[in-house]
Amino acid sequence: MRAPDFTLKDANNQVVSLSSYRGASAVLLVFYPFAFSRTCQGELDALRDGLEVYSAAGVAVLGISVDTPYSLKAWSLDRGYRFPLLSDFWPHGAVARAYGTFNEAKGMANRGTFLVDVAGVVRYAEVNEPGEPRDQTAWQHAVAALAADQGV
Image (cartoon, rainbow, N blue to C red; front, side, top):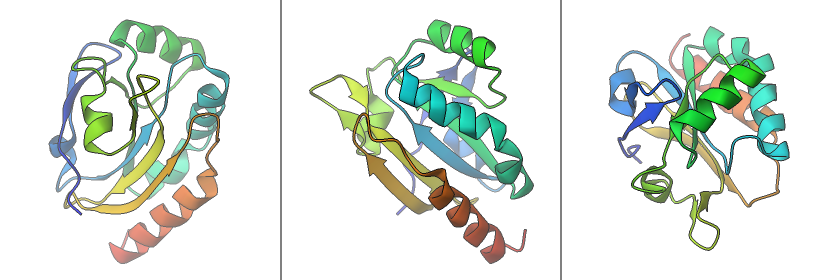
């Protein structure tokens, strides 16, 4: 499946498009419900602490939530995240909807994770419900398999 393209603002109000990574790097898209929430913070802290696994495999990491860029900026600075946090604030949850992770009843993204290869094809996907933390070991295995396929 081809990954739906999108353009969102990051925590610095800079525009980021998924298509800008095509041909250059694979991308791990990590949808999460809200900044400053306990489970989301634990997941993104683990990404921050293990970022070299993804970088070494040539994979860029993008966090995506329905928070505003301003709250993402405060959270990113507070937690020391070294990867972009993107705001799917308006139109509210449009990118999460495109990936099938938007929770209409709660107005937020469920915990969706998608590994997109350099050609823009989704090579790994998982969606967890709110409050159900993800096991990042599965992501790392998917990244290792992709790196092996691409000779990285």
